[in-house]
Image 1 (cartoon, helix red, strand yellow):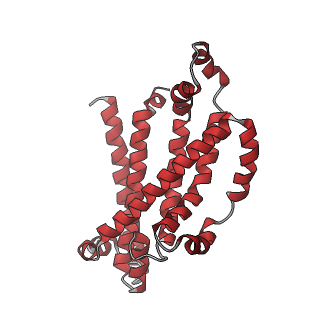
Image 2: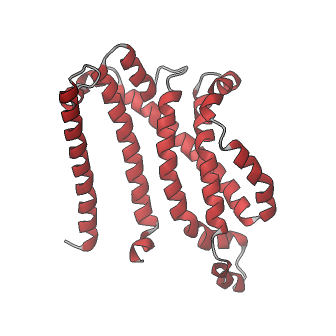
Image 3: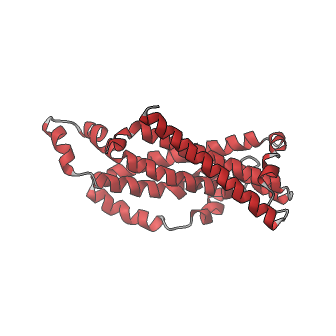
Length: 254
């Protein structure tokens, strides 16, 4: 077995060990507390057939779509503003204070206003998630661009490279690790926020599914929905790790 395959095997082995330990801890806690509000893992996993009847797949797809669209829009906005602010001190001086002022505002508190302005449909939910994660991505990209040593551009400049070529061959590869790290955090925040957002004005999504199950005092289905939401977040993290390994493989050689 070569070194690369061994590293991949170890990666998934640690994931499996963590999953097993999590379930053991959950099982012990549920048996010791012995309350209806905390069913055992076996009860929750055994509820999958009823979850399928309740269209857990449809709810999952609705949540996945919202996460992908929200993160995609946030990344596009953040790349444009972050790159411009990183390159231009003047633009950064203008936009920086505006972002610093807007960033701490609790975006979930704006949900009722956004729903009034953009109705109760998908648009309002996506706007709220974008507002929650986009500022962090902008600041990360801006700082990553500013931290690139100017000496890195000298070779391309001497060959008469255009600004687009400098961005393609120097800037984007240099800031990619920071972007991916920030995306991991953004995905976690977006997934958590989505749970709350999907309890308003919709009958589709895992947030709705979880709260609806709680209202019906069906704790097995409630926990099953929570596990599915966690699993979706976990898959997104694995995807980013995979992209990181492919596009930033040079980090392993350090």
